[in-house]
Image (cartoon, rainbow over all chains, first blue to last red; front, side, top):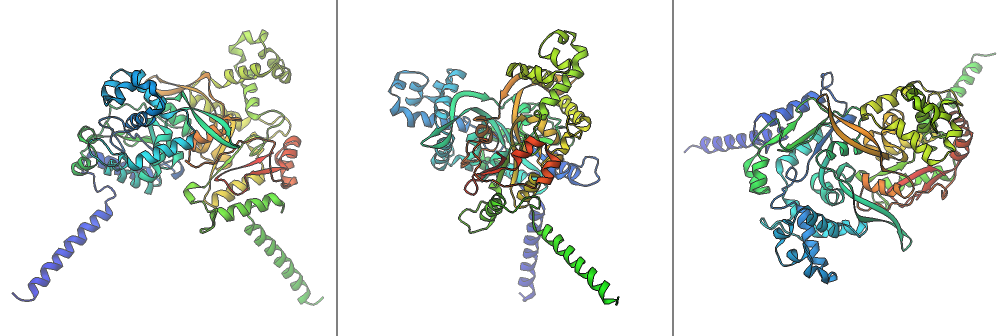
Length: 306
Length: 306
């Protein structure tokens, strides 16, 4: 074999590797298949960010809102926040001997959480109230932070904050690079999500919109605190979502649309391999349909798993 | 006279003018007197923005909140939003013949607004509900916008959006240039303030926190709308202010303080000439005391007229 052979082959390989690297670097959404949803996203961004385009949106008005559960992170077998609530019941049980004989706590403490939650919305609400209220916002933040640092997902045995969707993280980064402010608009508890949203998604607390309980201002030991009361203030779900967007974002020309799960108008397979890694089966099935609603006309865009 | 004289004198004048121009350009707060408040502000900014300083705040966490009435714009003889409400009563009167004989409307329509409002909080609330509810958010925005474009302040005979405090506008610009997000946290109505806050103060709608009514999602002629209901959702005043800051901004380590009018801990004369131009006598008296609370320790800082 002459010396030109081996020299020639590595050069080709290096060339191939460099060209793949260049493609990856130039594609801001490498985990997305080339399909109609990816095309709609990149077209939407091109239309709204190009000066002179009829759909141009000035940088200050570029806002994109995302659901969280089942969209940015997984939500099976139960909403992660509900799993947090169930864990808290176990931690708090020694202070509540009466729970041994009171539902839904009895079933939860005996390891039958599904049976407990099958008792209906009232049971779920009771779990959430007991686990989320009666403490200051700082105490709650600390509790959630510690839980997220140690608790493992029942199936994947990984931290909950690992169970995010890579394609959606790329989408967040891509939109921010194009001047969009990224917001979460979720039925989840606003204080629960804010603990991890900045670190995990790059979404600062002031851009997280969620459900909330009433807060009571108090002085404790000469220091001001806000106590989380067991009283619902706002449910950021269904018809509450456009109201939440108006309340927190409130641009005068919002063209907000009702945000339903079932009317996604664009579909695409996201990268199956990464979804399978980061989600679970049920969430994966849903993650394969990514709805862009509306694709180009609105300033508030919800990219959601439909 | 030799030619050197005239040449020499203008050179001195030009030199003086240039040096004043340079001073103005280098001073981000030219309307502020050199006093303890200005010093506290510039020291606060230096401490929080210099990397390595023990009080350094990362750019993403730099947030400054401002009251609006009597702080960013004037509030005498009545809150401007209440003057808007009174004007609306007159516009809506033809559709409400019963108001001719019903208080507080009767007194308002007969030109005795102060007499009407002296009837107490219930009368004021009634004026606000009638003038602010029963329409969509878009309709309300349009109504406020048109009013602001034409209505004149009863004493100064100028547009209300002209009656802002120049020193505070400089402070907003200065803080933003240093990486702070500037928020309004006011007892005023959130939708009322958002109509002008971006244009007048450079504060985008999503950074305006205020009092709000319940919003109802509806479809009208196939289009989604949000209807403002005559029902209070949240009063962003007194103990409601720290709750509002937590609800809308919600950083895990907020160190929010109770925001009272009477405990300003720093004073300074702002530029009297400009205050006199932009405010009125009562607001001017108050604008001469600018409280910085707390001056250096907190990430949420309220610069307020005390």
